[in-house]
Image (cartoon, rainbow, N blue to C red; front, side):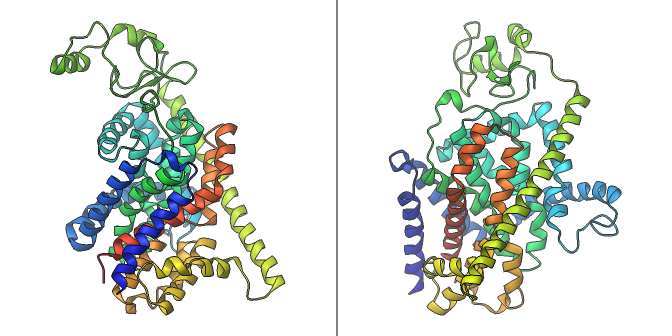
Length: 460
């Protein structure tokens, strides 16, 4: 009898996205339908086939290798912060495991941008995902990027793009960033809760982030704005959709706007393969001459490292403040009535959604309290609360609980994202993001509920 309730729950969560939408008339229903069907297939594959989970685990392991290299540098400067051998932070420390690796991750991805590889990768992966999901190229790629990098790292390495996007699209990216985890922390998660459901949650969350943001904050992106921005003079004449001019704006040959699929110039060979071959093989001297000289590499690298350091300080300050403010609210509520807290209040609010995940009334109440704890504190605290008992839970409860917990959707993450954007973009973009903090938290909650509901359909 609980399977129909689980199905109903998915419908209710999607309806909530429509009801609370910023602009219901602009919701791209075709994209929402395609993404929902695609994510249900992925949930089925990842819960039913070991090779599906192995693919996600392998990709995450690749990023973990990069993080382990970052730990070597951390241990050189700050001995024993990541263990005596410099290979593992034990116990897990938020600053060490989630923030300090930014000092390596950001410069590495900036270098890939500098040489033109990352814009090229974003363009082609974004095109493929965009064609399937009917989403803008960068948003489609970002959903995959944050699956392995996490929110702060993905934002940091995408700074060139978010600086050139419209403020409304920045809000979408901020909302999406509430729904991911950092690959470097996955190893810690799987020591606490069932690994198979942790690894299943990661890709499901990322595509659900596209669904939820498309409903809560739909934004029309015209073709001329659906571009991938790159550093000036990068990658020859055609590796990315656009390059920056002297003012940092995306440009194409002759200084006009560049967009994917722009028409060939009058000097190109017209038609099909001939035009493609001309574009690939022939370099336009006029276009190359119009670009400013590229910044010297080591000057560029120094700026990248300093920017990463500044970003870490801003994020740390915002996280400390947001978590402390939540604790202050708890103190005030406790003074009014001792059992009252932000965590317990959210636990009551989350009871109905927990029921809609296909749980009986008693189990749903238990889960709602854990959900409230997670939203106020973080996923580590909530996972630690259930780690000793979760192996004895019913398999469906294990699945929906673990998937819900496997995300950064909490008050502290709001501080991380706002702090990250403050270090990346201008006041106009920051102000619009700050006005939508409620939608950011709602986005994270709805994504977690959708993901738990989708995975729960296939695990009983």
